[in-house]
Image (cartoon, rainbow, N blue to C red):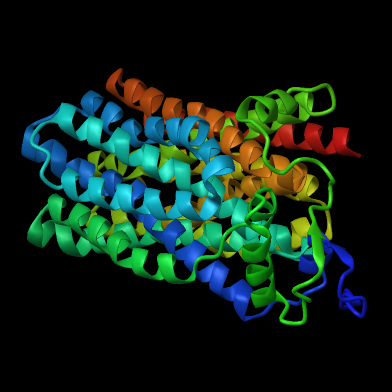
Amino acid sequence: MPQPLDQSNLGATVRLDEIIDARPLGRFHYLVLMLSGAVMFLDGFDTQAISFAAPAIAREWDLPVAVLGPILSAAIVGLMVGYLVLAPLANRAGHRRMIIWCTAVFGVLSLVTAIAGEPVQLILLRFLTGAGLGAIIPSLVSLTSEFAPKRRRSSLVMFIYCFYALGFVAAGLVSGMVIPLLGWRTLFVIGGVVPLLLLVLLVRYLPESPSFLLGHPSGMARAHATLRRLDPKLSPRASIVVHDDKPVIETTRSLVVELFRRNWRASTLLLWIAIAANLAAFYAIQSWLPTILVRLGQPPALVIGATILTTIGGIIAATVIGPCMDRISPFRTLGSVYVLGAVCVAILGMVVAGGPVLLLVVAFLSGACVTGGQMSVIALATVLYPPRMRSMGVGWALGIGRVGGIAGPLLVGIALGAGMGAGEVFLALAVVLVAAGASVFTLGHRRR
């Protein structure tokens, strides 16, 4: 257990990481986790809602299956733009402001989605909504990891990602109740109203990043106020410094360049490969599994149940993967998860047309590895990069990784449209997961 900081010298200089690492988890940590988790939940709900609405949209507008690919991928393209272009603005605007404004934006855009009248409008709105959603996640991850003691960082980042996965589950449950009665548009009304209501709590209680505040001449007082919520014994006269003694506020260009410097280049590329491969499998399964099961004649309740279980499996797996990453090795743990996931996804392709029990069991196990891996790889990024690079490193990793997330649903749509069977599609996704595992094992070897 870390020892409390000695502040007998009230004017002493103390390091930000020492203040944070010395504190046990308390009410302030749980407040940050709950607010961050709530935003992640709504992000997940909105991202997945389109997958459950797609069959109803296709029926209403009489769309062929190939047209659903761009609709399903539009938000993922927007997510990539949000990660790469908008998220880095948090280095100037602050994580708190980025989270609040983008929550308002994606709430409003979700409401507008409910009145879309044709595919091009829907694709554009899903793209813009995705951009707002993508700008939020790196700030949420950075804020959570900054306040988390180092010994619990992977677990807490994965905890808020569990809320993201729960948003996927909620989208399935709500769609099953709402779409048959009120239509698919109501799903997006719900996805727009709730974020706007959450803004009240975010404005009132969400703290700003101390390292961001310490980078501004006028931010020291606010940083003290924020950190005293974490440690009431912190002296107002203590001088707080960021532990790596490097500038907190750097240009976007300089931080991007640093990701490719000699000591980071290979690690950055390996991380991108792992995330891209994982997201290709993740979004392909989440986007197309409902449609594949419907085309195979599975009953609606089983379609929703199997899709939801791929997410529930990831949430439950996160309670095991996170502590293993903290206590054993983040690289060995995650690499093993991906290899096991490849086996489960290959088997999923064999049972999609089979009996309900086996389908549900394999869907759960596949989700435990694929969805659990998707949450885990973000925690891996927070372990890999130091605080001053973390938001940029996470944002760019997620942004570049979205290339896989975009390609996955599009390629599956093309393959299904060309007559490829479900078993062959899932076998290809299993190979993709093997590539993710190999990248993580190699990254761990380099780190050692």
